[in-house]
Length: 246
Image 1 (tube, rainbow, N blue to C red):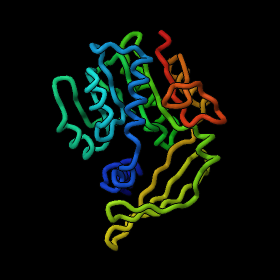
Image 2 (image 1 turned 60 degrees about the vertical axis):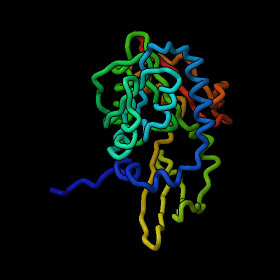
Image 3 (image 1 turned 135 degrees about the horizontal axis):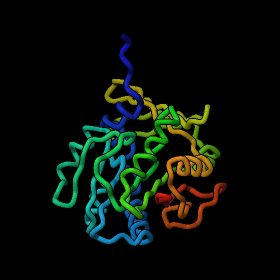
């Protein structure tokens, strides 16, 4: 029997190079977005929040500092091990595949910063949305924060290099067969590694269909972290707010 190779997200997120490459991300912007989001959603501090695909838990931890009970879930064992250092009575982390039903329900389920569309099979991507639905309490709210694929494709930088912490990255990007792919060549002290990111270029209509098929109703849609209206041609982000039909 042929052993199946790990998918890109099973290996890349577990490496230190992922965190080195993206260490320059603007977390002030991310925290401002989270503040805007919880204000818009009017979340009570007694409400529970699931941070689905939480990485090392930075955003779960920030939500917890705002007074919320947060459960961070991520496939990466390394990420969760690092996040667990911050656990408390109101902050919990667990290794979990977001395609699978989780046993606890929440008032709010967040899937932030394009942590969706990783799977080549559309059935698996729909499973994630169905997991979100099954994880919501009655009248619970789900949020998916995704890239605006149209704008990303139009502004794709085909090739660039980046260096951080003595590690050199050679990055090549392309759009093919409905996927935005980033090929990542890493050179660390003369040793080379190759990784890949491959994300489905879902658009607003795709999400409308998936949400409807999962029995979820779209409430609102925003185009940036200031929660301004979504414009398919110009918006940086595609932020979807939804809840169950029943």
